[in-house]
Length: 123
Image (cartoon, rainbow, N blue to C red; front, side, top):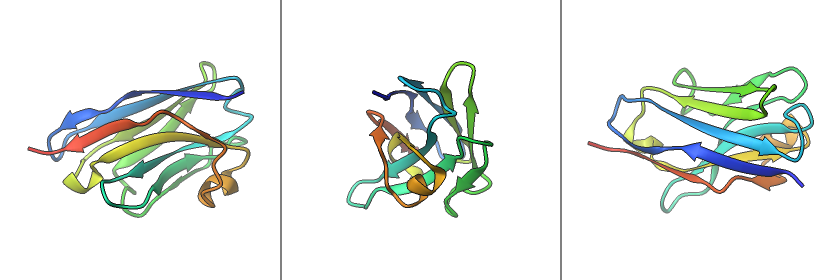
């Protein structure tokens, strides 16, 4: 059984930065593709970024390209989402996710979810 435990999030001013972490247990990061989704109030859940289990290839939503960076620590089974130049429209609950393949995540076919973390960008 894979378990995803998130940390990070909080309140930040526009233009600021935050880092989210996701500790993966039960399997290694080389067994599952991992990524991040978010859901803003009144909106559908959307994919933010994902990373391929085999070679670490990354993918980003157009709305966060150039501002967000996904990375992983395979020794400690942790996935990170570094968020820079944050905007009010980035306000959402962010979820760490895992699935058997990179394509599964990009197709919203998620096997495991983290507990979610609130990110609020506001003055």
